[in-house]
Image 1 (cartoon, rainbow, N blue to C red):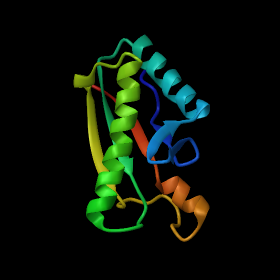
Image 2 (image 1 turned 60 degrees about the vertical axis):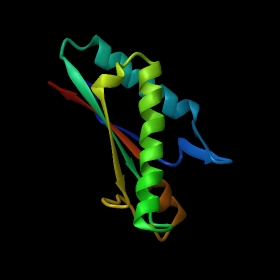
Image 3 (image 1 turned 45 degrees about the vertical axis):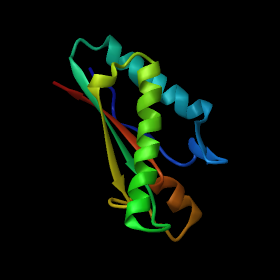
Image 4 (image 1 turned 90 degrees about the vertical axis):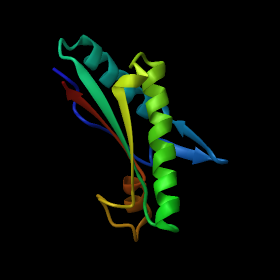
Length: 119
């Protein structure tokens, strides 16, 4: 069985001095999902979708969300997921899951979702 969707929000995927980093909790969540995917007998592909919250132009939000998604895609590749099985999507500020007027809401909306899809 393939893993459930992994959501890495702003509490585990942070930007410091312009560099993205994944904290130990986020890294563990990815490692567990990858291990489960490798243990599955199903063939799969991975969709990595980046999201943002409104801070500037739509174009800038798309670029930010793509950067986040590409960062996570590279982390998946380092854990043994073949890059050709990974699709990166930049969603931007569409589909918020929380209220952007609060810090907690913005942290939830500043996220990357990782989905393992069977062939």
